[in-house]
Image (cartoon, rainbow, N blue to C red; front, side, top):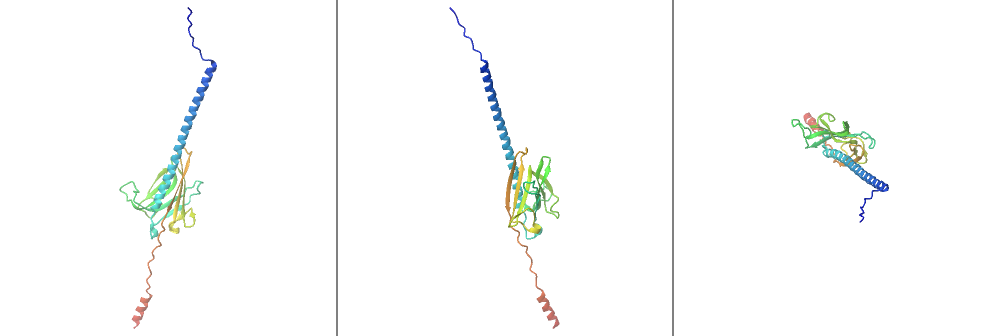
Length: 235
């Protein structure tokens, strides 16, 4: 009786090559998918970061403009915008506001704070690049554009444009001491992500009540009294 022992067939070279090619294709596709996912995630994170910074900066400036002090006495009203270039060409405007706020201006509880104070915004450099700086000084003193506490509040802000509405057009510079309180202020902020791959823009427009006309006390007419006194003395 003959006994046949079955034998296992080996892979041919063609089969090995095909299997190898399939493995390479699958590995390549997996690597590409993971790379695209990682790149998309980084892009989304950068976009969210840039938008969050732009929105935060614009909202912060708008909040302080809303609180701008308005009084019949011009001494207690100040809103000044300094033109720092055109938007899209590294605009670096700055704004100075005399504001009424209940927020604490100084970190030291021993320092007087509250009520009316100076608030100023501008762009300046930090170790991480350009940032939005906020300077506060309360109470307001004789030198409105100096003193107080200045610190960076929003990183990654690369452009700041501030315009004032005079009722007919938007002006790039303004001083309430000469022009009065504007009808509105428009803030445009451009911010970037940490990796500088994405920029985002945010805009706020704040309407303002015009300062009432100063009250001029009436001038008393003393000519009649003087004439009467002179006539009476001659009798």
